[in-house]
Image 1 (cartoon, protein in one colour):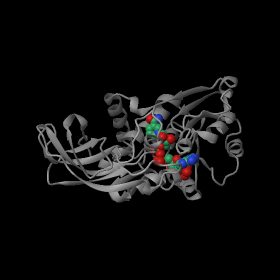
Image 2 (cartoon, helix red, strand yellow):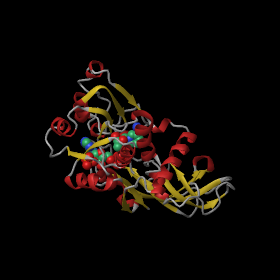
Image 3 (cartoon, rainbow, N blue to C red):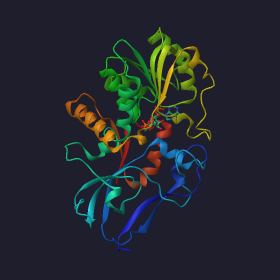
Image 4 (tube, protein in one colour):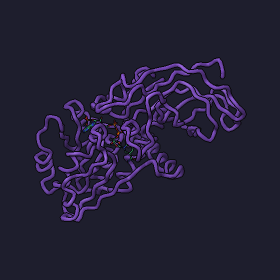
Amino acid sequence: MTDMIARQVQLCRQPQGHIRADDFELVETPLPALGAGDVLVRNTWMSVDPYMRLVLTGQDGFVPQKRPGEVMDGAAVGIVEQSGDPAFPVGTLVLSANGWRSHFVAKGDALTALPDTDAPPQWYLGVLGLTGITAWLGIEKVLLPAAGETILISGASGAVGSIAVQLAKQRGAKVLATCGSDTKARWLREDVGADAVFNYRTGGALSDFVREAAPDGLDCYFDNVGGSMLESAFDLMKSYGRIGLCGAISQYETGDYRRGPANFFIAIEKSLRLEGFNAFLLTPQENADIARDLADRAQSGAIRPFETVVDGLDQAAAAFAALFEGGYPGKVVVSI
Ligand SMILES: NC(=O)c1ccc[n+]([C@@H]2O[C@H](COP(=O)([O-])OP(=O)(O)OC[C@H]3O[C@@H](n4cnc5c(N)ncnc54)[C@H](OP(=O)(O)O)[C@@H]3O)[C@@H](O)[C@H]2O)c1
């Protein structure tokens, strides 16, 4: 043990239904002594992401489960404070999977040094990290919406969706977007660049919105939410349309997040192409190549990385719960 104390967020009970901040507690724990080759990192930023709800379902399968008493994990950016590894000198900014804690001790192979750029470090948790890369995959590899085509993007106000809207606009497509508040809808039109926005909480039927904005139907659908929105989109696709299956946030708290749409047969009727994609399966080289392309676009102003910063590790659980309430626009990051 060192005489240093780390603060960390751990699960204190098995969540039921909607996640609550008091499903977690902030605890203090002594840090282990540094062994040969070990590195001590102080986290400065951590990410909260919807997939983290899936480690709390109590159902083994897609992702290993966290049990009460265990510390949460997730992407974080930190600074090396002590080092026994010459590859990570003191002061190096590093990316790790050890979020939800103030400090940790690790071997260098669990760390990635951030590239030496002008990009704010927390962008590596958002536009240059998992969520930007996911948006890029969906638009630039899977769906490839073209000029003259119409794409619907659900969950458009979130970290993935707000980048996907901008990438699709750059390709010349007409972009229809969904979100859950009028404030976000205005922001999506005025700042992010969507052509038309549907508020799924108050806007009536998605079909009425799409039939007015795109009377011939949808060429592409970028699905972040699953559930009834995906079912409705099936009905609204043109023949030979493409659906990119990115996530199903509306199902993550239902106890049955793997459920598919009841009208799946429409995929046959309309000769739809469905393609799921999982950014966690990319190689480090693929990640780096996509991040470089996104960094170029962000630096030139071609895309704007929208983010919401929540201050303090003690607010991380509340920030996480807010993802499922549509609480914040853009990528939510916690400053530690
Ligand atoms: N395939 C991959 O590799 C990959 C990687 C990262 C993320 N994802 C998935 O991509 C999706 C978006 O992730 P993100 O990081 O962009 O999340 P995010 O920033 O938290 O945004 C998600 C948005 O979804 C909306 N939402 C929340 N609950 C909803 C519900 N019940 N019904 C409809 N909308 C709801 C909220 O806004 P509004 O309510 O205002 O719309 C929220 O802001 C998630 O499904 C996530 O799991 C996939």
